[in-house]
Amino acid sequence: ETGVTQSPTHLIKTRGQQVTLRCSSQSGHNTVSWYQQALGQGPQFIFQYYREEENGRGNFPPRFSGLQFPNYSSELNVNALELDDSALYLCASSSVAGEQFFGPGTRLTVL
Amino acid sequence: SQQGEEDPQALSIQEGENATMNCSYKTSINNLQWYRQNSGRGLVHLILIRSNEREKHSGRLRVTLDTSKKSSSLLITASRAADTASYFCATDASYKLSFGAGTTVTVRA
Image: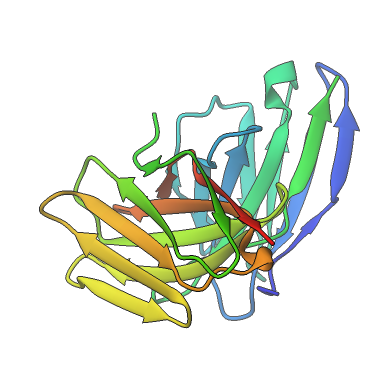
């Protein structure tokens, strides 16, 4: 167990809807990163938050947005869902040493 | 595009044998991390090796890093059925990890 939790575990939405995924980071970690993993592929970096500010962003459109709260937990919001957004969404919190520890993920299915 | 590329894509071995998988990458890195993933769930951190390190051990795992060749290898010794999983290398160049597509390892009893 890494101490990183995510909710919900599974989610089914329809095209055009909006979704919010949540992540609680490991105690003592102030950096949270989000990744999207399509079936059969490696995770793709979406963005990172450090002390409530976005610290870097991957090649994802603006309809992917996020927040980090004072307790370092985080949300990923996706608007106008598309079929290709179906994936496993992973969040990771980082230690000072640089290791990123991942949560169990949220499986999103868009119909 | 993905930074790391694992090789082979899939590996099937007998319990007790060693498993070796390789990772190649394209740009300079701060460190390289190996992860395991079971059945499409969360990633389990295995080991981190920094760019100024050449070899690292953790239990039955041995990781090497050759920055001149931009490559790394992960060796799992004396494999067990529980080692059946997908293994990913991830390069850390700045603030993000860049993953390859992974190596799927099957350990046969």
